[in-house]
Amino acid sequence: MSLKDKCAIVGVGMTKLAKKNPDKSTIGFALEGCKKAIEDSGLTKDDVDGLLFAHPSQQGERHGFSGRVADLLGITSNFNATVDCGGATPIVLVQMAAMAVNAGMCHTVVCCYGWQNNPIDVPPSLPPNFEFTLTYGEIAATPFLAQIAHRHMHDFGTTNKQLGMVAVACRKHACLNPNAQLYGKPITLDDYFNSRWISEPLRALDCCPWTDGGGAVVVTSAAKAKSLKHRPIYISGFGQAHGAPLMRPWRNPKVSDWQTWSRASDTAFKMAGVTRKDIDVAQLYDAFTIVFLVQLESSGFCKIGESGSFVEAGKAELSGELPCNTAGGLLSEGHTMGMGHIVESVRQLRGECGERQVKNAEIAFATGFGGVVNEYPPTFSCSALILRR
Image 1 (cartoon, one colour):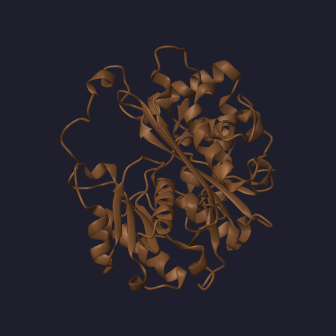
Image 2 (image 1 turned 60 degrees about the vertical axis):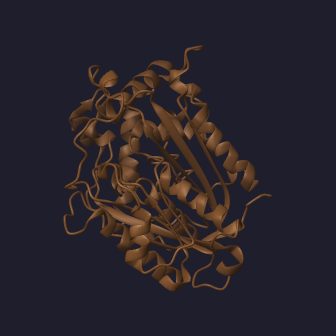
């Protein structure tokens, strides 16, 4: 049975985003995001019977995050889980909520996220198998993705200027979003080229900022959504895929062979019954500029190797043929593990985005990307979501 349009997002909420906000804990940010989303939906906490929480990786080995959030909200839940698929998680939460509602396990689910970058309980030990990558400088995602960027440049002629155009476009959009972490701080290509190297060819402005904050969305049945405060934003299609495509010994993988990315979006488009040309606005996971470019290609919005020229031509800007990351994305709105992409998609389809509003936006596409790219084996989790009004 297809789950197309069986459920809808009826409420969204985001906290203030900042590089450092010690006033709230991880759970504190999640609680605020939940409160805002429930209020936005016109419901009360007593109307909610499910809660899903994106696991905050810095917090180490902990159990029952989602249960604690639900209890602190005063929610009696029939469906509850803490989920970890890295940056793919927020979209995975929405998928799980839709499936749970359709399975009859619950009727209204809050999907939430919270992140505090300065926890007091950072685990003292290294991640599993880190000894196999640490000696080669693979200490984080940045060095790994720098290799992907090098390979993309080698295979397709992608340039630093084109990477910089992604950063500049996202910042331009963030300057139209008062809640963006980098609101009011425009950048130029000169600023991009003057930013310091992090792991060549990636500069500081190729990387998203550290962000303290939280957010949430409320998912319920399409039937219930019709009687609520806002026009329903239907969950038309979704997909996910997982694997370690760069570690298959029987072939020589290339950047262009990331089938994991494509499977998630292909599944979403098949479920929704729409084409890439039907998408009015896209929110592509952009923790790094190179990740944004690869997703343009793997999601099918341009041919393999042509994402650099796509961005350089201005096609991903608000005035372009595929407006992308209209709130500023992870690069400039702030790193909310992709929850901000879902919230912005809903707001665009509601027509609530003011200066950054995409005219007549009816269908939105969003992606998530996570995994342990700097540990062995480098596994990926990819998620995709199609929403319509």
